[in-house]
View 1 (cartoon, rainbow, N blue to C red):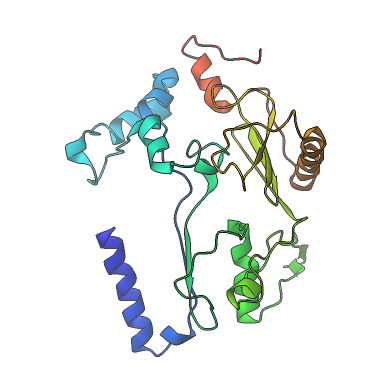
View 2 (view 1 turned 90 degrees about the horizontal axis):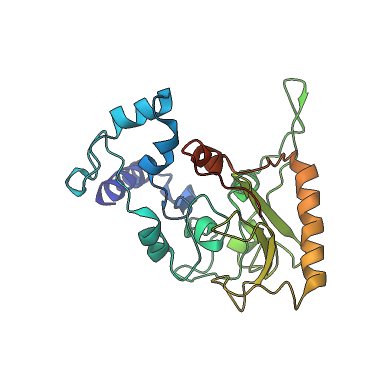
Length: 265
């Protein structure tokens, strides 16, 4: 962190030197979720493969005394990753809030609310492109080199940064995610997620993030219509993005190579 701070400071010093610091918007965001995966455990089902040999050759020294050195891949495992993400549930590679929430800091000309914390906005990394395009006064192209360009799905943050709104999204707007066979949809305060065991129940669960940001209480039984609405949005997300969901997670496919077969009940 100290090294990163020093290098960012060098960039800021240069911007000031050339007179562009006050004409620059800075967007600083962390990676999502604490790393809870065990590299050696993940590779256990691939003994003898090129991936296994590469991992063992390059990440052989993973003790605490080696942290931060070249050629190491230090881990602290799922339990400490969950501690790191408290009060949110789970961690990287999963679609509970602990796996997808990230802190974001923005500063620059025209940015209002300096030093304030905005917990109302529902943002996504894909919003950065339309935000920068609007700040720069650049129109998103519909074609490039004669080929059609896919429309931007993100929302510009400019209205939020100028203090005109708390969020770039209206209450009816929604976001979707999928990774390693796990999937989620959020609309306003409502969210459904589908995780493989032991992280889920092989089915959709419904949470109200305003009342339950830790996703501890499945509301499917008390709000079946809301669950149905969000599942319909998931179907729309699949069509919009060409999502193909396999019969099982690739992580669990690796586990099956060790003789541990995980399949739906």
